[in-house]
Image (cartoon, rainbow, N blue to C red; front, side, top):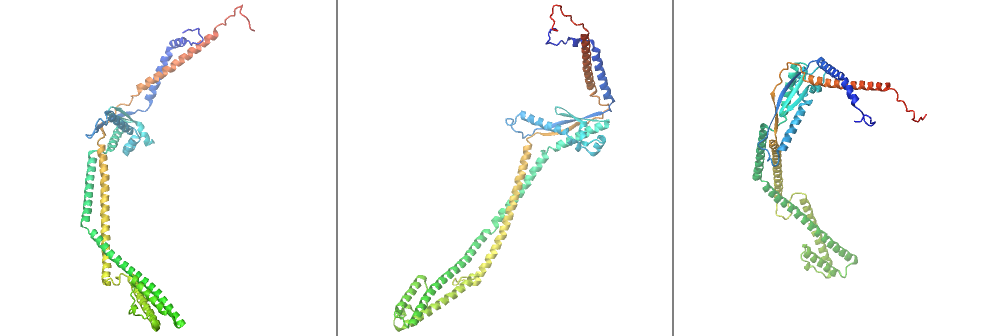
Length: 457
């Protein structure tokens, strides 16, 4: 270090100042330590009691292959679990788990319950946990440490449901559910084997086909009769027109020819539609001569008679279609068809009753199966939980009754006060040395200027 260089700071004066005033530093250190110790000793006495807990965790016999789950992941999982449990021990939750009489005895007056955790500290060393409680009396410190530890042990152990009792209960529930499902399945199969649903379905189909066939037969007869009536009406209108022309003209020269053509039409219609006119014989009609008018009247009368007969037939069919009566000409009696209809109603009612029972048994079986599947899933979760480490906490040592006030922090805080006092004394010594050096600089005489130096004034 060059003291003549303007770019460097000379620290030697500061060091010399500290050495000359070492008593200041020592005195300030002693004073700081004494003040801190006096303040601590002047405060109300506090007592501390510590309860010891131990983590116990055993890995299940169903542990996964180490090629899948290595030791590092197992250790990491264990450390994570314990860190979470220690956080619970330091949380406000534990204060709410304490008995009310303990809180009333330990908690200072007008202090919120949430502040109680400030009187408890947690220390760990391996699997060992120390729960230290501070209070104004030995009894309060001991009570708070022990009750806090017991609440923590109970709470943590209740968080571990995968014990043998829970697994056995889940297995029993699955066994009961399987028994209920087997009973429901057996009842369902017995119903299917003994019920007459198939026979009833066949009988319903047979009776339904019989009734529908009867209705279709009546509809077919009605349609046939109606077509015949329309055809005969056309022929009747032609015959009446021919007869009116003959009366109006006093006889038609070609009446015989027209009557022959009309008879031919009747034969054609009879051959095509099967209309049988109840006339003696169309071949016996005298188509010529003076008897043509008489023969035409006979034909008109026959047509009217046939139309009237078919209209009566249509009325009969219409009435039959409105009821369960058999089709005319079917050979069945109304009593027989009424018996068929009543049998169809009874069989249908029996079928509906069996269908309702079938649906009930199906639903019961489905509910039993769903319950079995849910309980099997629950059992699988319990069995999977058995592959994990079950962490338990046990109280291995209750807090003893403290006999001396807690002065564990007195020495540390006193030393810290002495260090702070020494630092303040060093600052004061440096400040005094700096002021002294400044006064000495101002008292030095001014440097005389050489005679040959130029003047700028």
